[in-house]
Length: 87
Image 1: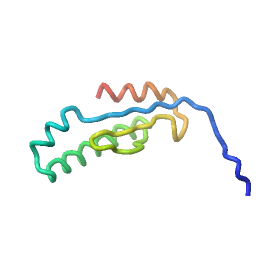
Image 2: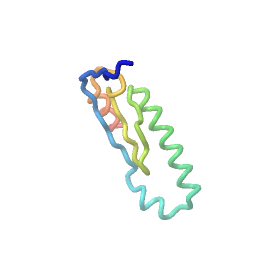
Image 3: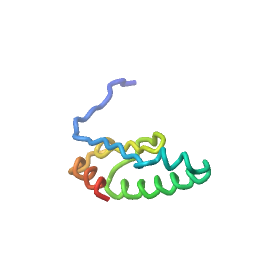
Image 4: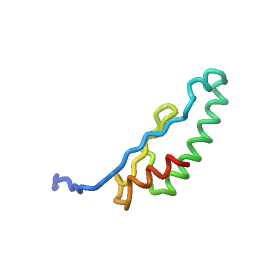
């Protein structure tokens, strides 16, 4: 068995996106409401991220860690991430 790993150098962008005011909002709501809002929000975020060739790496509380160009090479990975910040 060959144990050599293949590698490829590429430009990738990592974006962290969190919900402004989440802590204050969540303190005033019951857990079921917070969960519903977060599920809806992450579903919408994921659709937009996927549409722009990004990939959600993980969710950390109210934050999403998103990669552009890390899994597969995409043109203009940094521009695609920046484009999302204006939505």
